Length: 142
Image (cartoon, rainbow, N blue to C red; front, side, top):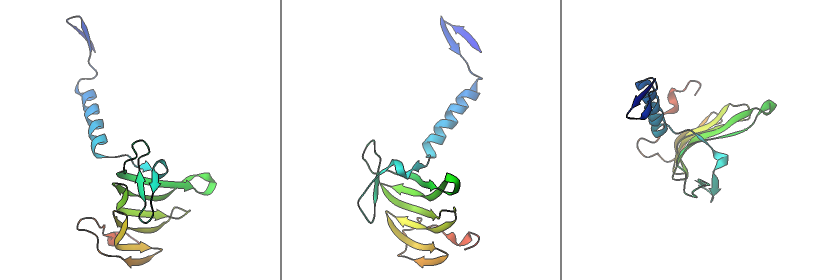
């Protein structure tokens, strides 16, 4: 609907519906980060590797993923996790070329901690800080 007010044309788009969509998008962008391709980041150092945002050269924080070409050249998820100040931090997963989960565990600023499942076998590292480790025992097939 278009209304004139003092020589100014105001465009009112479906009342609060448009404003609601704008707010919803703002909340989504504010609280839910889109995972970023690990290939877009710059890596430096070794054990643990630090990942940097190529635009700012600052350590990157947020969810990331890595894909590789699978059968029929279809992208296949290879790795997923979260970076904090450039280091793996929180749940981390690694997949084989068929998309099967082969490794999962928790990292604390790039260092494995707590219980990990590697090729179906359980490995235990030093405990994770409180609230960081994920309890994988409820996952079927483990």
